[in-house]
Structure formats: C-alpha cells, structure tokens
Length: 177
Image (cartoon, rainbow, N blue to C red; front, top):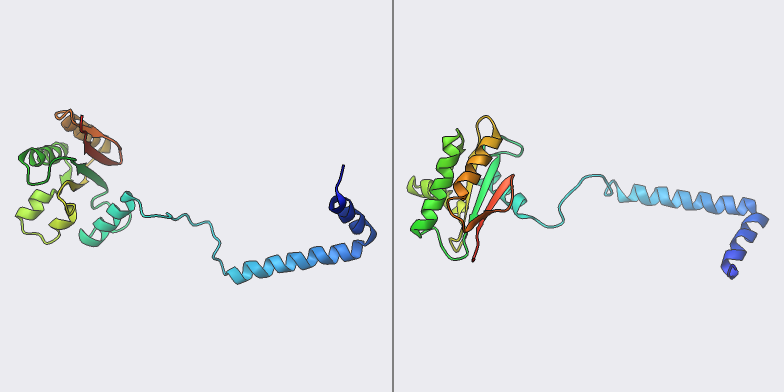
C-alpha cells in the first residue's frame, strides 16, 4: 500500500514528463552551483579531528629538534611514563639510561632528557612533562629497525612493572601492580 505522496509523485511525473525533466535539470544545476561555491572544501585529504599524542610528538620533534616532516633524523620515539616516579628518582634514571644504551648497542642514536640537560641544551625541557613523570627518547635506528625494537623489548623486561603498549612509538607505562 502506498501513501498519498508515493502515489502522487509517479502519477505527476508520468503526466508531466517535460516538467519533471526541467525539475531534475534545475536540481542538477543547483547541486553543481553548491559544489562550486564550496570551492574545493570537500576533498579527499585525511586529517585528524583532534591532536593525538603521535601528532604532538611529531610536532615537538619538528619544532624543537630540527627533525623535518618525513625526515629520518629521529623517526622513532619512546615514551616512558611512570605513575609513581619522576625523572629525579634514581630508578627512573636507570630505566631511561638502560633503554637508551640498549638502543645504542644496536647502532641507534638516542637522545635522553638526562643527556640534554647535562649538556645544557635549552631544548631538554621539551623531552619531559611538566610534572616530570613522562619523558621522550627520540632515536634514529641504524640498519634494521627490528633489531632496535627487539633491544627495547629486551631492556624493558628487566623491569617487570614496565609494559610495552605500542611498536612504532613505543609507550612504556609503569603499572601499579
């Protein structure tokens, strides 16, 4: 059963084919006009709605460490975070330095907050959070990236309270267990 509109529309289209074609053409012209007025605002470019941590880290490396977009200066990044320790704690220092040494043992070049701070580099503060519970370790693997990833995993197993949550940008978060 069709309601009144569903019956009337086909009946009108059949009885007035010229008028129906004109209405369709006017609708098409309106659609093309609206697309032209939009001026290319509708496109196929993908962009984030928000700014995820990976984008923030890329922006940080680009602006503060001179690593340009899509460069190979420091294409990998470790994010080390602790719920109960800060960068001032010796255990935190040991964990960060162990991760950096594991990377460097496999030929990678790593930058830690401790090294940058000791060198007096004004960019050192960009590698730590305001509360000191999180630090970034940008690094450049040489040769096989899988070897650097394996070295980080091996170093992280020394502390059972650290866990790996990502592979490309490795996030190590201290568990409260």
